[in-house]
Length: 154
Image (cartoon, one colour):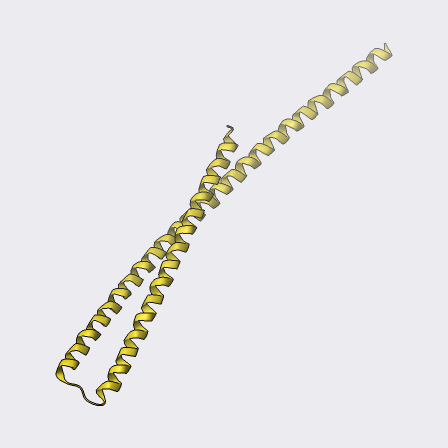
C-alpha cells in the first residue's frame, strides 16, 4: 500500500469515527427529548393534582386526607426533582457527545487537508518529472537534428 493509500485509509477511519460520534449525539438527543417529555407529563400531573385538591378542599377535608395529600405531593415533588437530575445528566451527556463530534470533525478536517497537500506534492513531483522527461526528449531531438545538419554539410 502506498503512502497516499494509507493516508486515505486513515481519513476513512476518521470519517467513521466522526459518524459514530454523530450517532451517539443523536441518541443522546433522543434520550433528552424522552426525559423532557416525562418531565412535562410529571408537571402536568402535579398541576392537575393541585387543581383537584384545590377544588376538593373548598368543601372541607379532614386531617387524614390533608396528610395523605401532603405525602402524595411530596412524592410528586421528589419525582420532579429526580427528573430534573435526569435532564441535567442527559444534557451533560449531550455536551460530552458534542465535544466528541467537534474533536472528530476537527481531526477529520486536519487529515483531509494533510492528504490534499500530500497529493498536491505528489502531483507537482510527477509534473516536474514529466517536464524533465519532455525537456530531455526535446534536447535529444534537437541534438540529433543538429548532428544530422552537421553531417549533411560535410
